[in-house]
Structure formats: C-alpha cells, structure tokens
Amino acid sequence: MSNFDSAALARQAVAARKLAYAPYSRFLVGAALMAEDGSVYLGGNIENAAYSVCNCAERTALFKAVSEGARRFAAIAVAGGAEGTPEDALPFCTPCGVCRQALYEFGGDELPVVLAYGDGQHKMMKLSELLPLGFGPKDLA
Ligand SMILES: [Zn+2]
Image 1 (cartoon, rainbow, N blue to C red):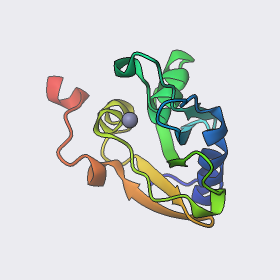
Image 2 (spheres, rainbow, N blue to C red):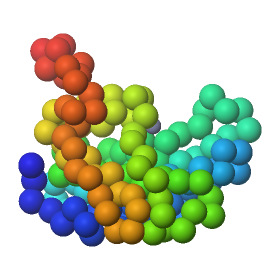
Image 3 (cartoon, protein in one colour):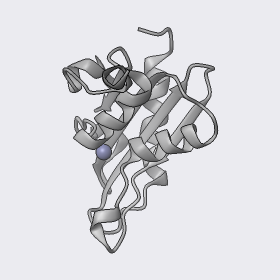
Image 4 (cartoon, rainbow, N blue to C red):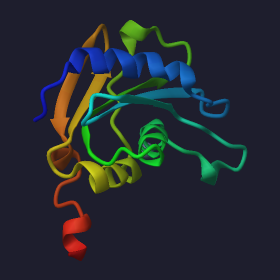
C-alpha cells in the first residue's frame, strides 16, 4: 500500500460530509481521494429530486479528480452517517458497488480504502477486499 497518513485522510472524509447535498435521505457522506501526487479531492453525495441521478461522495471526488487530469490514486477515505450524527459517533460506512467499480478503473486491486467511523477510528481495506475479482482495463487488453 502507498505511504500516506490514513488518519488525516479519514479526518478529511469526515469533514467532507459538510459538502453533501442530501435533502431526501439526509444521509451525509464525505470522501477524500488522494492522487499519487498528494493532491486531495473532496466530495459529498449529491442527491436529486429524480432519485436515479443521485451521485455518491466517492464518485463526486473521483470525477472531480479525473476531470482535472488525475489518473492514479494513493487512497480514498469515506465517512457517512445520518444528518445530525456527531462526528465522533459515525457508523461504519462502505462504498456502494457502483463506486467500488468506478474506483477500480483508476485504483485497481491495491487501492487503499479508509473507512472512517466513531471517535477518530478508521479501518483500512484494499479495494480488492471490497470488490473481489474486479473487472477493469486489464480485462479489455
Ligand atoms: Zn456509491
């Protein structure tokens, strides 16, 4: 795994929950995606009255980064919980399947995924643990 400060990235994901636009679910998610050059892209979930076009925090951060030229990433941190949940009481929140696939395109099996929860705690997993046998660019080569 890459060398980065997982606790700091987890804190950035928690703070990124403030960027969420989630008037329907009132479940605020934040993501902090670190590119290989150390740049960090933040994202919140973005909901819509037409529910099917909602976008998760992870993909918000990913699409921001990719649209600005980043292609490889050191890690992503994610934090989520119902609106009003104190930061020190956030539940364990994992990326949805769509986000796991989107991240796989640019991070592959080894991308560290930092799951922030509770009082400054986090669990670090590899993307391959969340998306075993992922389908990616290698499969089309
Ligand atoms: Zn998602």
